[in-house]
Each structure stands twice: as structure tokens, then as C-alpha cells.
Image (cartoon, rainbow, N blue to C red; front, side):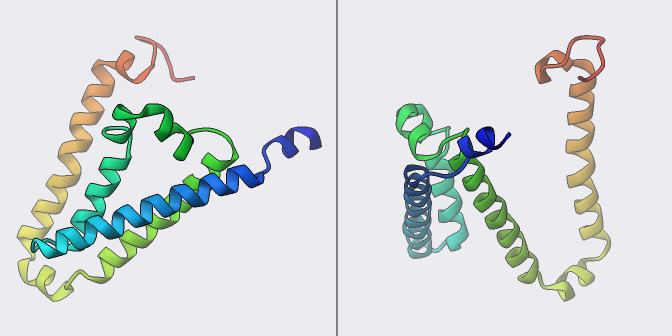
Amino acid sequence: MWHTLRERDLHSQDITILFLGLAVLLGAAHAFGELARRVGQPMVVGEMIAGLLLGPTCFGALAPNAQQWLFPREGPAAVALDAVVALAVALVLLIAGLEVDLSTVWRQGTAALAIGLTGLMVPLAVGGTWAWYAPEWWGMPVGGAPA
């Protein structure tokens, strides 16, 4: 048991790759955030664009080996990176929630409630229907129970 746990420990190379990946993410987010601010957009728009460009859609499609090396999907560095990403997402949601002007939401009342419920129920209904009628798309056997 101890042998398998030691194999999953972070080594100096894993830590170096983790910090390099975080530096690239933060640097790109800052640069694109500033660029967005200069063209009159909120900084968060540029930061999100940086995330899209560094993800599998752009960077992963153009240089998959480099993207896999910098942002590993398995191993101890991937676990550490996932933890940092989860913390970052929680902080972004916290900051977004703190910036909501509740007096405006209360003034909008019914319209805000209708938009919120629609934004929740429509994707839930579409996704549930899709999963029900096309289970093979999600890796489930047709007519079978989940493993």
C-alpha cells in the first residue's frame, strides 16, 4: 500500500510543471484581461478568452503534446492542478455573487425569476431527454443500467 501511495507523490518535476502551467494561465489571463479592458470590455471576458485559447479547443488542437505536457490530465500534477482550478472556480463564483446588485434583482422580480427558472429548466430538460433517448452518446449501453 505504501508503495502505491509513494508513486502518486508530487516530485520536483511535477511541481515545476504545475507552477509553470499556473504561471502561463495567470499570465495569459492577465494579458487578455488587460486587452479586453482596453477595448472597453470587462476584464473577465479577456480572462475567459485566455482560458479558451489555452484549453483543448485551441492550444490542444494546435499542439496537443505541448498542451498535455503543460496541463497534464493524469498523475499527481493533474490532481494538484484540478484542486487549484476548483478553488479558482469557487472564487470566481464568489466574486460574481458579491458583485450582484440585489436591489436590482428585487426590482426586476418576476422577470428575474422567470429568466432564472428558464435558464435552469430548459438545459435540464434537453440534457435529460438527450440522455434518456441517446444513452450510447454518454457511454451507457442501450437499455442497460449505469455501472
